[in-house]
Length: 310
View 1 (cartoon, helix red, strand yellow):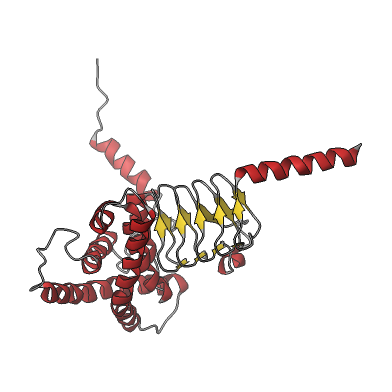
View 2 (cartoon, rainbow, N blue to C red):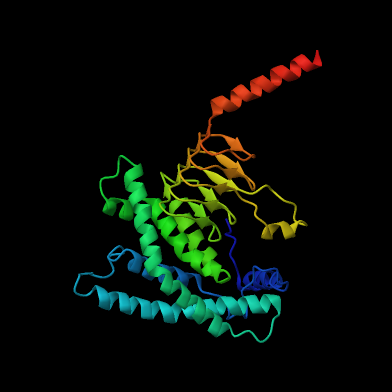
């Protein structure tokens, strides 16, 4: 029985067919483009920044009280050089897409990098609050170290807080590369454009989605599967993308598993949102929303409608 072999002629024909698909530039080609950030480098930089935020976390360096200043200084110098280069590539990509001339991409990149590095002390303080919220909110937690090393929410939130600073400086591509890396590792999808306050805790975490224009206040707790998402819009309504499309969650709110909050609505301060509910209207402060209440409301409306039709 003859085996089908991939002969040189077949390979040549196949190469020609594949090459033909490269002729249209639809955004999935990366040919003759040297001004794109390198995903692998971004993730390496993210690991370096994580080492500054949680010294000793990665295990790549032996950190002691006597050498901590040297290690942090060494990392910051490396991050400044490498991240500036990657951000410059991202700005060059944006200039190519928008066909703009005269942008000083290097200076813009250096300013964005400097901004992020100067925010690291503040990010550290925010993360202390996030870890404290996890420890206070989860009876199973035995120590802060356990939370930092093993809880997926800390990786996702730390990555978001780094990426958010670059997003504020309008750095293209790189903030999403960072948060999507955290998404793939933790199952928690936080857009870098979201605004998140102090002491944020995501318990369990898998399947959580926080959209770009979401606003989350202080002392907020989510459980797995919580979604803050926008109402689906047609492709032609692109101008809506720049508007507030996602929910606002005020301070001291708890949202339980698989709750979906849709569109530009507000969940008032101190409210509790039960599991598996679907919310498209704002909720007043101090309100408890549960499936039982929704079912009761639905039956009441159905009963009134039945009486009206008689």
